[in-house]
Amino acid sequence: IYISNWYMVAALMFVITIVLVAYLPFWQDGLGETIIQGYYMHQGVGMWFMTFTLGLLYYYLPSAFNRPIYSYSLGVLAFWTQMLFYTLIGTHHFVFAPLPWWLQTVAIVFSAGMFIPVVAGTTNFLMTMRGSWSAIGRSYVLPFFLVAVVFYFVGSTQGSFQAFRFTNHLWHFTDFNVAHSHMTMYGIITFALWACVYAILPRITGREPAQLLVGAHFWTAFIGLFAYMISMMAGGTIKGIQWIDGKPFIDSVTGMRPYWIWRAIGGSLMFLSHLLFAWNFITMVRRAKEPVPNAETTAAEPALS
Image (cartoon, rainbow, N blue to C red):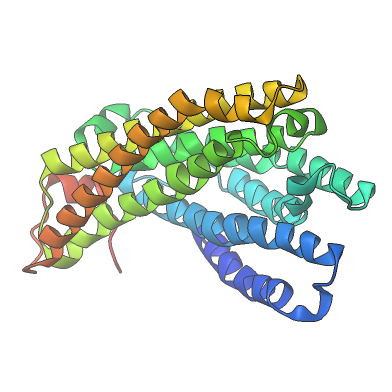
């Protein structure tokens, strides 16, 4: 069985688990509701969105480079360690909350364990790309995949690091968490989904998007996300230090003004990239015709059969 199938089937199976645990009211009284909330947040992101996205990466990257995945064994290691560790880390959002201390510690330990699947998966992806870096510069699909892989490593590693008590003490309740959420949901999942759309839609419709507009979409999204993340991480760190020092709360609010301005600039660029993507999507589906293979679709898109 292909590793991509493992991830996609697991994502569908965990949707059932998420619904049964998070939406049934039987265990949602008192502090139990807080524990379920942490479980729901992380399983929704990590065992549905992220797991399905990793399945797409394991399918499209080998197809795009016309070679097998670098290591099947690394893929198996990454899959099973994610299944083991990710399912018990939701409580790290409530470190220092009035929840059982042992439960918080379990979440922290398993968050640290997530270094294993992240390093294994990232190594697999990058080694699959090895020797084909020039192809990335010539493609309008592969840069999106590359960004997703890089942010998969950076964002997931950051998430594990944030789980520790000494980092929670600094960053919890600050804008740093907003930056982390955007790095993972936007930088990994959204970029990977964009890549898949650009890879498969021209083969379905026979229409290629304008490479200039795809490039504009990529760079406005990437620069916007980068500005958003850096401003929120820097501002969130300063805010956390001010709270620890006992500064008045309003000082942390007024001190965030320049960082929120940069967040607005980054968010505006991200919004512009969405408009560009919508236009590219419309131009590809507006008038379908017989597919005409070219260098781009041949090199960067998998067969549909």
